Length: 239
Ligand SMILES: *[C@@H]1O[C@H](CO)[C@@H](O)[C@H](O)[C@H]1NC(C)=O
Ligand SMILES: *[C@@H]1O[C@H](CO)[C@@H](O)[C@H](O)[C@H]1NC(C)=O
Ligand SMILES: *[C@@H]1O[C@H](CO)[C@@H](O)[C@H](O)[C@H]1NC(C)=O
Image (cartoon, rainbow, N blue to C red; front, side, top):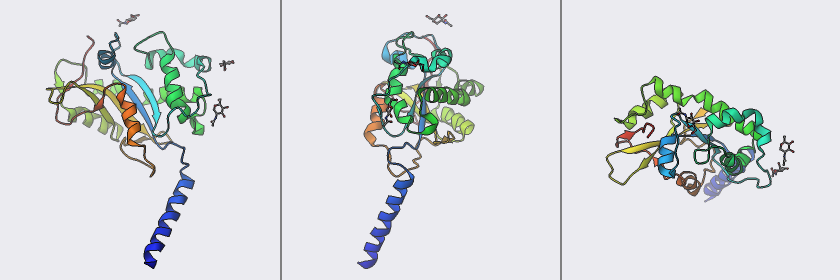
C-alpha cells in the first residue's frame, strides 16, 4: 500500500515537472503539408494547370485559432508575395489572399507561440523556406515518380521519401470507394521538431498528444485519409 502511494507520488511529480518544461500551450511538432493540385481540384471542382506540389499549410500539432485579434495583413509579407503566389497558391481563387488569411488565423497564430515564428513574416517565410528545403518536386522526379496514367506501388513512393528525408512522412490519398482498384495521391506531410529538424510524423514528443478530433478536422475538409499500403496509387497528370 505504502509503496503504491509512493509510486503515485513519484508519477505525479514526474508529470508536473514535465509540464513545467513543456508548456501546455506550446506545440511540439510542425507539419508541412503539401498538396497535389490535380487531386485537390478534382475534389474541389477547381481548374488548375499547376503540375508541382504546392503548400497547403504549416500546422503546429497543438491548437487552432489561437489569437483571433491577430489579423492577417498582407503588407507584412509583401516581399514574400511572388514566392507565395507560386508556392502557396489559392487553387480555388488564384488572385485572392483568403487562403493565406485562413491558414494564418487557424494555424499561424498558434505556431506564433514559438519565438521563432512569432510574426506573420516569420511564419510565412519559414513555411516557404521549409518547402524549398524539402524540395519534394525535385525528389520525386529524381526517383522517377512522376504523374502518370500507370499506377505506383505505395511502398515505392513511401520508400523514396523515407530514404531521402530519413523520417516517416504521412502520405494521404483520396479513396473513391471502399474496395476501389486504386487510390489517388493527394497530400504529403513532412514533420519538424521545434528546431525545424525533420521528424517522423507519427512520433510524439510530449505526453499531451493532439486529441484525435483535431486530426479529423485537419484532414476532413479535403476528403483525404492515409493511403492504403496495398492499393495501387494513381498520381494524376494534368487533366
Ligand atoms: C496556367 O494558367 C495561367 C492562368 O490561367 C496562365 O497564365 C499560365 O500561362 C498557364 N500556364 C501553363 C503552363 O499553361
Ligand atoms: C494576440 O495578438 C495581438 C495582436 O498581434 C497581440 O497584441 C496579443 O499580445 C496577442 N495575444 C496573445 C495571447 O498572444
Ligand atoms: C499592415 O502592415 C503594414 C506594414 O507593416 C502597416 O504599415 C499597416 O499599418 C498594417 N495595417 C493594419 C490594418 O494593421
